[in-house]
Image (cartoon, rainbow, N blue to C red):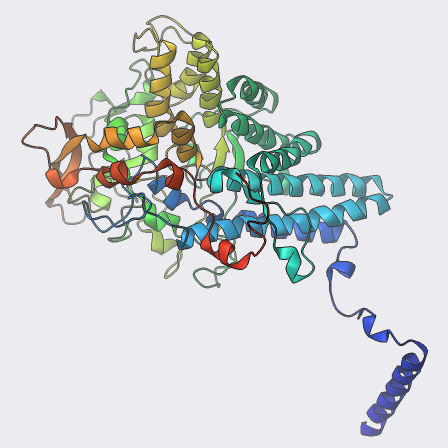
Length: 596
């Protein structure tokens, strides 16, 4: 055996010497046994593998920084152990470019862009070589998906960072210098990602079926284009995109709003853009392993009321109050139930939209973590008066950790865009264009789905026999309702993270909003619930929020919200996330083009 091996080595050496004598540049030859960008991308199978990697990057929760984005708006009191303790820099409006989530969001979005660029360049190279019609069609769909995903992540970065001025990558870095790109103007960045999204509109299917369900679609691309123009307050430009999304793609409002928040009815008819997660695979990976196909960000533990004493996002008092007072339509039979004590028919305690969105201690009609009454499952105490149901598995388990013991995993899909939101954004465009009656139609479609009292004069509109609030709305009053009731109650804590901040910013009201909320005062009432295990009455101390006038002696002086935000918020410093310090320190070309 040794003689045989030596003989092979001598032959190999002779070949090497021959090659050396005949070809001096032999060191530049490519080793065919090494995988590189030159030899990996050969056919549609390789394109599919690459696209899977793009979707995997797309699924990272760091792309959205939902907890931090929520905390920097008027929707959340943010985190801490118990009110009024709060050191959250986003809630206090004192965040800097050194914050880890800001750096992670930047890096995660550019990671997805980098992977998408690999697929785009490879597809553009491979498609002209294909001869089979089915392969050409498949490759073109892969290219369209990759361009959508690149466009979406630039859309996300554009609305989140540095007034939209960003480095643009449209190639794959080969050497170190290629990783460094200068800032481009916001207009250049916007035109770049809009070109990707327009390409996706023309080349993606309206829907996918079977195992492909959940892939990005032409309808999602149209929605993002419409939102881009809405966020610039170009209402007449945005409106046709929203109208086409509503009418041309087969989307439908689900009868139950709860179909959009749990593992129930995922990828449903209302879903426009959604990240799919599952817990039935790869459960042997550690807590934050990137290969896991479940959600590993721990969102559910930061939103729920059963995770312990740490809460990443707690609904603001004004929002809790609005959820508690969301008016129901008494003509809708879904709003009635049978009283457990008397056996008589009665109206629900809270609206369906409220009960599916948040957990309130005195919601006696909706179970919470498999307990008969909401107040039995969580420690509603010391001014912790509300927890999110969104993003959590409250309908499946008695505790989040039971699903994956010792791990932070969830199979709840993240719905980034859904039809309910598009109806409301279309309504905003219509209000600004002076079409109040049609705007009411769009809003009332969303309200009627949840059995809510409709807006407008009694006996008017698309559903004249349903309860109406009997208000004659003007453009200003309807705009105010949409901003501070409809948008937050329907869409709070959802989406790709930055929507509420973008809205407050483009309306020009963010500091004013913090000042207004800082002037409000509250106190909390106690609530008694029977423990289902012991049968004993348990008092949930200070668990029902009540708003009072500033001079009311019941007002809790230690429970004021947004005091620091009202003082600290500065449009120049906090309207956008700043360029991350990681990018500033490592990119020598960042300011090569001075962008004003």
